[in-house]
Length: 231
Image (cartoon, rainbow, N blue to C red; front, side):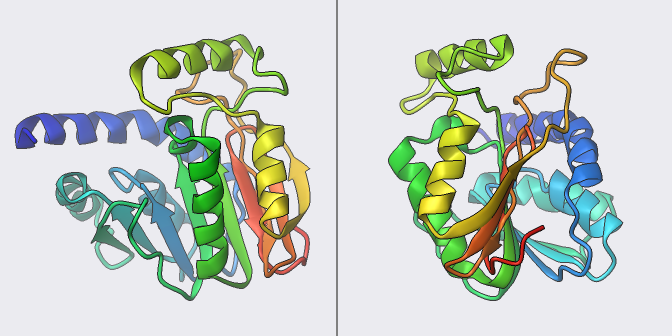
């Protein structure tokens, strides 16, 4: 509740996110996409860079009110107020709305239980238009949860410091997305944790969401297209 501490934290998150976001922008193809919902988007870093990269893309960032207040400063400083809008809300209970053709969930799942992750995936599915894309970016482990070493240690740290803290396996996230109706799943790495340990083991699933959706795991999170079109 300390506004100055929150402000310091959000700016620190922004600095930390810049490197990861630049890597994500290189692998997440949003050509032709128009409406991005950035769930739990923190300082809005991803939305700033993605809307800068893709002409015509507009983003809405859903965040807690205290964080959103600081994020508005960051968005304004980046000259992105015409492209990025902040929405105050708790993503656990806030409505996601409708009409989005991209949903990004970054750095969230390591604080969520399986049941919570499944609910978030379902909310994303329901707010996407046919052909919409879901991208989940976070630290993910291999099956069994014991590798890579950074992900395993990160998961241990989260388990000790957060009520539902953990690191999920990318294969599990892919399965949850498939069971929610996403199809055409694939996996590709986009950050080499051996070179520079990121705050998350990179994995990004992507897919098409329409009861039939595609899903593509990078190694920063999942992405899924809601129409079965494939990516």
